[in-house]
Image (cartoon, rainbow, N blue to C red; front, side, top):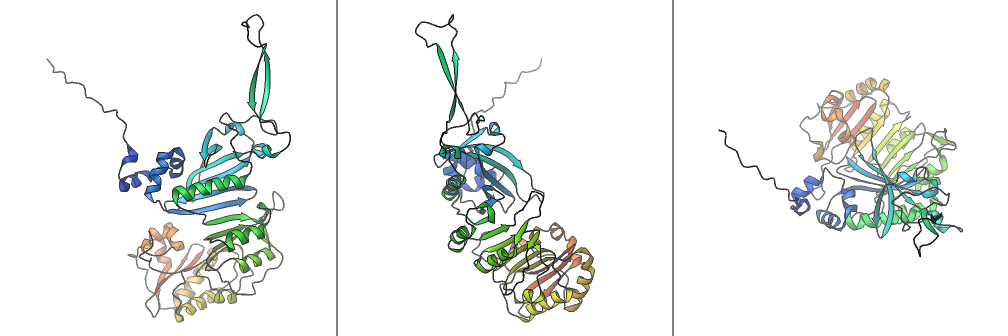
Length: 431
């Protein structure tokens, strides 16, 4: 006769995750959306405040008529994008099924996944509603529907009709079921609410802006207030499309104005597919970090050698030759610049073999140090190159030592020429 074992008792008590010590809790929460947890309730916000999470960037967007922000963390591997749209312009307001409360204001929100081709910023893109109709004359927040009661079923003392109120926008379309009248009337007020929220919970202010000239009423005034007079780590300006099928276009005057007025320590990025007008760089580049995502036929050897940039990236269209880069590297070798970090230029696949022949043969180069750990050094484009981490690119790379012992690497791989100076991370910097 088989003995019957007593049934096992399963402990169904809830596990108090948020009561864990700071270290284990931080490691567990790496798999969660920090921002969604912060919005959940006061307790999660209070716990997140104590963790001192490091935010990579908090960038405000005013781009192609869209207004919002991007918050990235975890070394840029996770991010939250949030945009705001006016109710009359929303094509599908009934799809906004979630409501968040921030700074005492309600935000009916639509949540959707945000895939990224590079796999570097996977997260959520949220779109919240505001209602500018509240400022217009004749605005009615509800539609009144009168239903006459069935006289045969009406109890004594009841009304002969009942009224149903349906939320509507100025255009007459229905609003989402989670709608409340406690919403903002413009995108700037919405942004201000979230800026205050991020500062309070994550102890992070605005780090940069990504915009085009048309997306704000007065670009010059906006730039002066938020970039020149306020500390700003990054500023990215994109061109505009004169027509829907036109290339991203930027005026030559606007590029010149931007290079002249951007503060030295603000990382500058310029994006356009076409430059309207004739542009010529008359003075040296003075910003410490610049990325040009535009055709660079105007960029000369003199512009390169006179540049004060410590981080220079040029995506396409540069007409410099192999000897120009050789002289640039030679200039660095003979100098004492201790701040230069990298030069990253797309040269085209058809130029790589000649580039390797000229650059590798001009200097006393060494085989790349395969034991070098990129995480011990300041950021360079090699940190994001998969072929560098699996050492595939090492065959197309050489190390170069300056007389003072400073190490650098010349990488001619694929369509890229990357000249990197290895700067050790400061002890007082995180990660």
